[in-house]
Amino acid sequence: MLSHPTYQLTNVTHRMQINTPDAISKFQILKNVFGFDYFRPGQEQVIDALLAGRHALAVMPTGSGKSFCFQVPALMRDGLAIVVSPLVALMQDQVAALKLAGVAADSINSAKDRSDNVKIWHRVTDGNLKILYLAPERLMTDRMLSALGNLNISLIAIDEAHCISQWGPSFRPEYEMLSNLRMRFPGIPIVALTATADSVTRADIVDKLFDGDVESTVLGFDRPNIRLSVEMKRNWKSQMLATVKSHTGNSGIVYCLSRKKTEETANFLCENGIHALPYHAGMSANDRDAHQNLFMTEPGVVIVATIAFGMGIDKSDVRFVFHADLPSSIEAYYQEIGRAGRDGAPADAHMLYGLADMRMRRAFIEGEDSGPDRKRREHQRLNALLGYCEAPECRRRTLLDYFGETSIPCGNCDLCLNPTDRIDGTEDAQILLKVIRQTGELYGAAHIINVIRGRKTEKILKAKHDQLTTFGQGASHKVQEWRSIIRQLVAVGFLKIDIEGYGGIKITEKGNALENGHETFQYYKDTLKRAPAKSKKSRPIDEGDPLTEPQSDLFGKLKQLRLRLAKDRNIPAYVIFPDRSLIDMARRQPRDQTEFAQVNGVGAAKLREFAEPFLQKINESDT
Image (tube, rainbow, N blue to C red):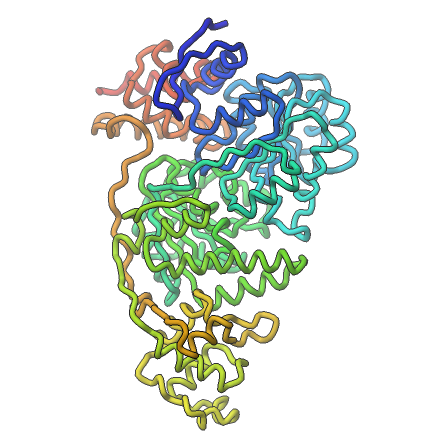
């Protein structure tokens, strides 16, 4: 045992004396098992709550080390820790990382043979496992709950806990059933963890999981190294290709709304010289796993995916995330862009959106098997995302404001780097609203634009809309300009799309006020032509001076070694060491095992497993 050590905590500015046995143990585990000297902000608060037997909610940004919040107390408390995880791939990666760190962890899941799952369960009942990962569907069966009720459970961790609130009962009802765990396992601390939860989602989690009895830790949501940009769709393939090619040789993710579009997009990128792979739920498990492994281990791979991909993916060097379609909400958007730039180096998050996206998203909400309250909430979430798309200034300020944070202009979004003034479009909007009213609020954008521009189409002549007083009053604007105005009027709430009908555009109460002169409308006339924001260099989060040229060269060699070792073990490269550890190696350049043990992320098991090959590579270097 260590005696009265002194540790520096990252969330305080002074050094403090740690005297309790629990405190000594948690620092020993952090260093000896995981190889780190300091806890990150928020981690200790959650760990201490669980060690004291209290429930905890942890809302922390992607890459902030949420897993340590339950892994450390799981190794300190007597008994078996249960981790509820939504995806098999996520379980497998976390289990692989824990095993490399020397932790007795495993998962029982549908991707394994029954005989393998039975063997793992025997390890559980024999007391030879400390952490067991389960999907909610497997956990929330009477048989599993009864079996676990006969064991000594140390804690229960629910990862990606926002799913409790945001996945409707028709999608994965077992996530809502997790609310029974508190009563089923009285006295057992439960921790819910997520990177994505607005105030409504947090309130849902606190109410459903904990009945209000929980210690909450909510850290900041800002990811300043990610450059944010939004663009209206015109030729989405060309827009996407420009972004992807600006990151040639880098890893990235392209998100699409449908499986079909995912396949078509991956093929299009391949035809244009990009190493792109599709990923969606309609593929076989073997193909999905193969594509994910290539993305995780090979440099420069672009994964084209539906939202089925990405949750829990811990690849540090994703340089861009591109949304070819509008996400479902700000929470979903934040979760998805959070897969970029985990190493702290500059990364891009670029999103396209159009009127068809808005209509499709509204239709999805209305088609969901859920009650009116949930639908109303989901519409409000979509409205907030559209407000972000139409933000008049700094996107990051708008994004953080949604999560309850205030900020100054970031200088790292398209609106800060390439500001475009809004112009007064009140008069144009009033003409448009009059056209919509005169045509009965029954028609979509194409017909409305034809009327306002004075086009005598067969449909217009049949409806006698060429006789309206507004016919041709907007002939001076091009089709794309009117489409842009309609999109922006919908986005800021003057118009709405009739989802339950046939997609006709209707005027809202706010739109009535605009038509009557009680509101004004400001819009981006040149939104469609806005140039991509020019990047400002962003310093990586890793502490210390930038790597010198020789250190950078060594860092590249260490990454190649890591990739080879990962391929030999058929695991993601980051499981062996994250980039932060390799950067620390390149700076320290340890020459023996004693020095190698001081590298961040080198615990006792990894010291035994990996010291020799990495020391050999370092000692081969001329630096």
